[in-house]
Figure 1 (cartoon, helix red, strand yellow):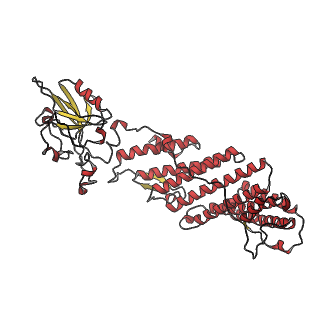
Figure 2 (cartoon, rainbow, N blue to C red; figure 1 turned 135 degrees about the vertical axis):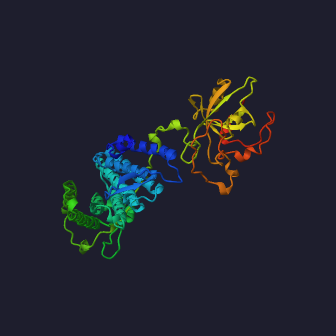
Figure 3 (cartoon, rainbow, N blue to C red; figure 1 turned 180 degrees about the vertical axis):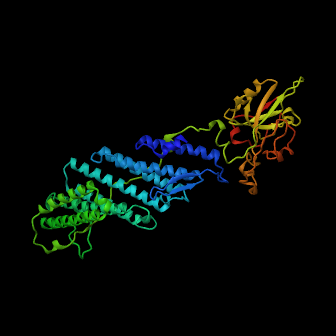
Length: 516
């Protein structure tokens, strides 16, 4: 309970992420140990919807696991937001955190269904994935802008930045379409929708500005053939209300096209500021207002530096900038193996065997003691972790003591042997001498130890819901023993004849050991 309580308020750093993922890994063992797949236990997991604040309860561990992963994804977004985005290293860390958040949301979307809360719904999760990718794309663009300031700006770099900015705007436009649809729109804050619109217009303005600055870089006569070809693929004109100049033929057309792009950038800057003022919450964000204002003033200075052109075509809109990118962003799935944990209930035995999917009798004690004539115990064992009774001789001490083929040895004397190997169990039995005290359990599923190919179709998946209240050491195993029907047809044991029956996969290393 202390671990779960800690996961409700994790620290906003890598240690908080590690805590959440370690608890998630521990839930894997808890679910397999104590939560049967065929029925629900009376244990409720409660979480509050991150969007509405409404509490939600479910009796499945899946809801607990999905909620933990959702919190981990949210924590990744906080780690991304706190990075220094004025440095390349900070932007790289922000991109990585956003991609990890997107991968975590995508993992929830693909692996958990029937969520009781809106924030875990498929439409909401898909929107969150795309929103995280959009923010990662925005950080990548900021990194490219930062790197371009270190070297000499030329038209080729400006064209790349223009298309990258247009790509960011296109991604935010897609997110706006997802977040504006029902039922997502009814649950997300209105601030989110407004901010996405602001970012879309802002990056469209930056795209036109970068393209205009690239056109001012040098005269047309100094352009390379590759530059002219790039201009053809960066812009697209409708030929009606838009300027039909794609590749300028002279410096007059170059300045005309650059001025049209700057004028469009100013229009988009004003639109982004208008959207920011229209939202009550965003209007109070002074930092956002300063950023938008500063970029607009910079564009105004560039525009005023251009002389007036006596060309009626200056009234037309510039061509659209085609969204494109040279960088592929891949989401990062949660790495559960990086935060490995030890099973808290390891003492119960291997989780693959002693899990909630299996039904067992209560442990029972069998005490065997050789007589003065040196008679053997009369049973053999196979496998390891745990060791299984392979065969019991008819009318032997083991048979009379209540041992049956298919019983699991979980204790020898005072020692727990659920994790012991084949050799260790055999050694303990031999060291017991003439008296041995065994603790056995019996699987209540008849087909538990049979090969899959030999199981009748009608018996597949059948699990008994009953449980034994205890069996005395002098009584035989219950009728649910795995080989009850098989014992009646058992052939006489021949110690000199090799067995032709297929063994269990865990017995390929060790032969059956006959204990006398």
